[in-house]
Structure formats: structure tokens, C-alpha cells
Amino acid sequence: MKKQTRRKFVATVVGAGALTAAQAETPVKKNKKMLAHHVFFWLKNPNSKEDRDKLIAGLKTLEKIETVRSLRIGVPASTEKRDVVDNTYSVSELMLFDDVEGQNAYQVHPIHKKFVEDCSHLWERVVVYDAIDV
Amino acid sequence: MKKQTRRKFVATVVGAGALTAAQAETPVKKNKKMLAHHVFFWLKNPNSKEDRDKLIAGLKTLEKIETVRSLRIGVPASTEKRDVVDNTYSVSELMLFDDVEGQNAYQVHPIHKKFVEDCSHLWERVVVYDAIDV
Image (cartoon, rainbow over the protein chains, first blue to last red):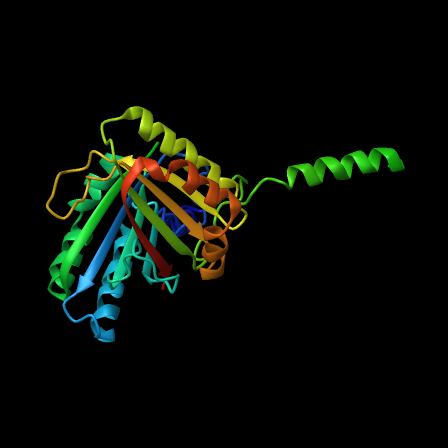
């Protein structure tokens, strides 16, 4: 392989390697203990589809953060209405991290900070649950 | 392959196939839209390790329910204490289902009913969030 070609080859591979763990096709391993970070957002304007979509677009950027192993963005499901079910939130963000350190690194990551800066005016309330697998 | 041998072979394969989706090594597919069912339990005796372990043991039985695609059982993680973080619960149960129907089937499944019968005296409060991926 000539030097020039090899450089191009390396660049391509490195480019492909730039996929984050969450984007890659290798899912979280079965039985691996993880930290689930689940955030529920209540919008200031819960009836605004535009605000909801802005928030969802913002949340999607978080997938690029290296320590985020899995990201699911959801809205209330049409399951049976029961007293114990809270379906009053607008958007849910569910992430998996390897450990507490991964979640801590995420909190201070520039992409996360930019998300908060761009989107925090949209919500009036946030509830976060961090659970570590037993 | 002789008939006898083949029958044994088939029996072995069928036996292996009896693993539930949650137990199997094939994880939830990347980008597949799922329903996340997240339940938080507050124990009547939050300082009783025995009660917590009883609840965790009960939750583990739920993995056998056919429509449960993934089950994570957690406890509050030692992430940074912030106003938005609720770490007052004792145990968290996070499940993935293919869809609302899968979650509905789970609710009325005998294994789930037995879990509620055996364990509901342990908790004083439950909050459930059902989120469908966007």
C-alpha cells in the first residue's frame, strides 16, 4: 500500500470508528451491570408539537457523547390508565451508562451543556432517576 | 442422521428455544422502537435489606414472561445529588416490550399476578412510567 493510499485508508477507518457506542451496532451486553439514567420532561407548553419536537431534536444530539451506551427517546405510551401510572410528562430520555463515572462525564460534556443551554427554556419540570443494576 | 438421534437433536434444540427473549443472548435490536416500562418502588421498610432482597427476588421471576424483552433491576445510583434527581425509591424495575400489547399481556400474566400477590405487602408506593420510543 502506497503511503498516500494508506493515509486515505486510515482516514476512512478512523472516520467509521467515529460512530459512538450508542450509534454502533454492538448493543449493550446481556447481563452486564449498567447505570440507567431516566429523565422525564414536562414542557411549559405541553400542547406545542413544535416545542416537543425541538426538545426531541436536542435530545438526539446527546447520543454523540462517548459514554452514552444506549439512548431511547420516548413519549407516554397508550397503556391502561391506572392510578400508579404517571403519563403527564411530555418526553422521556432513557440512557444507559457503564457506571457512575460515565454518567458524571456526560453531565459536564460540552454537547450536554449545549443541549441544556438550547432547550432548558422549553421545560418547566424535570425528574431524574439514576438506577444502578443489582 | 438416524430417526432416534434426530428426535433427540430436535428435543435439545426445542429445549434451548425455551429460553425467554429476555434470557436469550440476542439483545434488543438497535433502532427498533420499543416500549419502556419503568417502575419505582418505595418500600414500607426502606431500611430492611431483607424486604429489598425479597422484592428483587420477586422481580427476577418476571423475566420469564414471554413478552418481556429486557429486564433491568436497579437501586439508586450514587450519582451527584441534585434537586431534580429523585433517589428516594428503594428498587427500580425497567422493562422493554415490543409494543403496548406486549405490556398489556404482561399485566395479566399469571407470573406477574403471583408477583403482586407475593410482594405487594412490601411496598407503600409505586410509580410507573410507560414510554414508547419516538
